[in-house]
Amino acid sequence: MLQFIATEFTDAARLFATLEADRGLQEHLGAAAAATIASMAAGGKVLFCGNGGSAADAMHLAGELVGRLMLERRGLPAIALSADVSVITAIGNDYGYEHVFERQVIAHGRAGDVLVGLSTSGNSANVLLAFAAARALGMVTIGMTGIGGGKMVDACDHLLRLPATSTQRIQEAMKLVGHTYCALIERALAA
Image 1: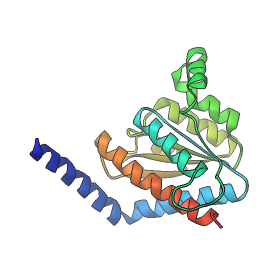
Image 2 (image 1 turned 120 degrees about the horizontal axis):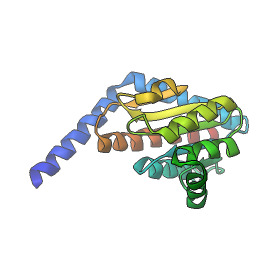
Image 3 (image 1 turned 135 degrees about the vertical axis):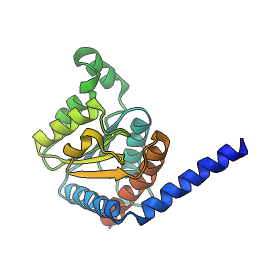
């Protein structure tokens, strides 16, 4: 058991070292945060979506912006599209699960807003349909996924490919990258 634990910690440490050295990812993250800052400065909002663990991460990141991460400031407009069970189940029942985020993007999104989609595979049908709806509305699209990128490669304005292939390592990277994204936004808009 202790060997397994040590191996998991070593794998996570390697991941974080890789993230620290990945200048390309850092540049994409900076550009994604800058686009979000510009949107919010102009009165826009951020919509987050994802499934399973990514749904939890979407809710967590929205909470960091609406509440606070580190700095006292006004709440920033962010909505987790995975948070309203009644809306999700109604859309899933009436239109199909692949449309649960798309319908909410159409309802809440406006030109200039931002959609952040999280998918460890980059192939979640409901996240991809949400990106298509967001682009049709003139929203900025940001994807967070594993190193392969999946179908998100062609679906996003800003794609944050996290240097991992296993679901748990991708999710661990999403936490760090997501917190950094929120911290950049918070620092810029806290004044």
